[in-house]
Amino acid sequence: MGPSTSIQQAATAFIQSEVGVDAADIQITTTSGSDVHKVAYAKQQFNGIPVANAVAHVAFNNANKIVAFGSSFAKDAKAASPSPSVQVEDAIKTAQDTLKGTHESSFPIPGLEYWIQKDGSAALSHVIQVRNQTANTWYEAFVDAHSGDLISVVDFVAHATYRVLPIHKQVPTDGFETLVDPADPLASPEGWNGDLTRTLGNNAASYRSSLADTTGESDDNLTFVYDYNFNVPPDYENSTNVQFAEVNAFYVVNTMHDITYRYGFTESNYNFQNDNFGKGGDPGGDRVLVSVQDNGGYGDAFFITPPDGQSPTMSLELALVYNVPVAERDSALENDMIAHEFTHGVSNRMTGGGTGRCLQTLEAGGMGEGWSDAMADWTEQTADMKDWYFMTWVTNNPAGARTYPYSTSMTTNPLVYSNVSTVQQEVHYIGEVWANMLHNVHAALIEAHGFSTTANTNPDGTEGNIVWLHLFIDSFPIQPCQPTFVSARDAWIQADANRYNGANKCLLWKAFASRGLGPNAQNYTDDFSVPDGC
Ligand SMILES: [Zn+2]
Image (cartoon, rainbow, N blue to C red):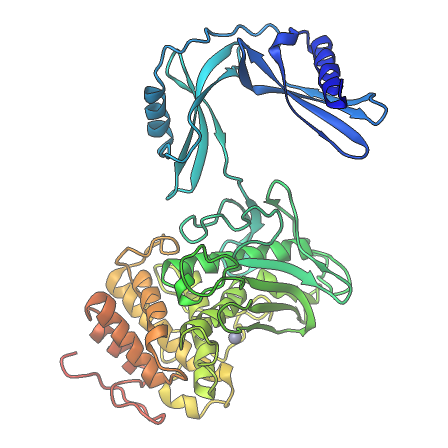
């Protein structure tokens, strides 16, 4: 008698005595072992048919002494007849109709298993896998083989929970929320974590890197729910509040991946993914690496975009603020800052075909800052298109980090094209001019076409905010390497011709011309006219 056989016999005898069932109703399904223990796993069965929800395990130490036992066996369960009275084809139809999915041809052939119900009876069931690839669902259905009813469902999809600042909120005072499964199944078909249980997945990894260590958050149940204590300052020297920061940064970067994916920043357009699922582009290997509470310094954040196939890095530093009890603030809690940084990756990858080399002139680099502010502005906008302030949390300043709020009012924000040559010759100042033009385009489109509240996941609507993001993404590949205000404006006009047959041509010209970028604008000389016919 081999050790495995003796383990099986000992386990069967133990279960029999503990639970009070016949030895014939105990099926040892598998055994495992290590250098310190052996474990036998068992299923209950009736009439030789296994019970899906009645399992047991018996663990032995090296002296063959039983050291652990668990059981969900049912004693005295009344088992239904082992001969089904409902055909398997009818059971498949019930499962498909009820769970809105398909029993795919590659799935295991449906078998019979018992299922112990709440009243203690054992129902004979057809067991059928059903999946819906669009809705990202995948179930195992138990259809009663006598009544035909769906009596139980096993959900194969691992649900993920994140406590975060939702993307449409800008700063922590807007309020944290706990979100379940926020991943967009079309953009992230395996979820954000895939089969991993850390703040690490196909699109992003977030962690705090300090001199001493690199840590990310990990939870076997994908439950990333941490509180944030505003009374304790984040600090490079301790881990206070780092968990929340890592989770929020992970959430925002993944959300930005999913939104921009819907509008065209896909695998074949050089996006950031570890696995491209054979859908084009590089072989993958370039998820975004997000370093929160980055110890590079204070008050800054930046994004480094190498060519397609190499991971970009996003560094989010702490900021020192004044006149508040807690003197440091974490940029990983400022959603608009993370959206801004991610968009550097979009503009750098999509301009010039994934090389990361095409926004290198002062003007193009300035527009890079502008695109990033404009995209962050887009994520926070509502139907009434409010004036928008960038980075109010980490600066602890309601006016934010820019010279003017973004606005359609010339009084509130007077910036025009000619200011490109008169503002401080630095990318962020130049970017303000471009971002405000795109804010004006956005306002005009919302006024003309309305506002969609589902734009993040549905790019098919006709509303103004959807049109804006399509033109924003569409314009990158068709503008030249080292674009200028003039050539980038032309790309927006052309993008509208490509996608909307030029339906918004005059609207776009009027919005750009209102800020001096009319058809005759050149060399930083304004033109407020619009083309004939507009
Ligand atoms: Zn920037």
